[in-house]
Amino acid sequence: MGYSYFVSERVTVNFSVSWWQQAFRQSSFVLFNPDPARIGVLSIGSLATLGLRPLPLVQLDLGRVFSLFGNAALQWSVPDGSLSELYELGFSFVF
Image 1: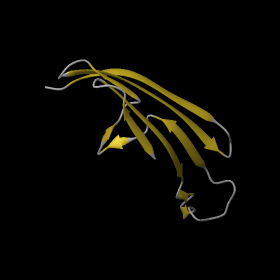
Image 2: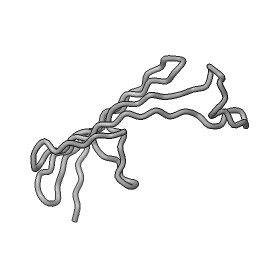
Image 3: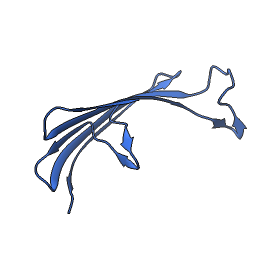
Image 4: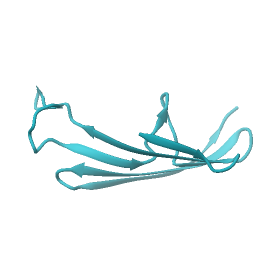
């Protein structure tokens, strides 16, 4: 589930929350199996996509062709409790 907000004409914020889980483990279908050891992952941050293009957490348009963007995401693996983080900064040039 995602939310996009246009802060101003030049700044956009995109925020998402997702849950995913393995459908196959050791060559068997486990999606609806009540096994408590199955792995699920809760993710928050810049996860949303528009088609095949990922949406940045924050995007700053510097003109018609240049923009800066930043991505950040946190993933929590359930039930083992491990955390992983993603941070990215970048720019885009559209011609």
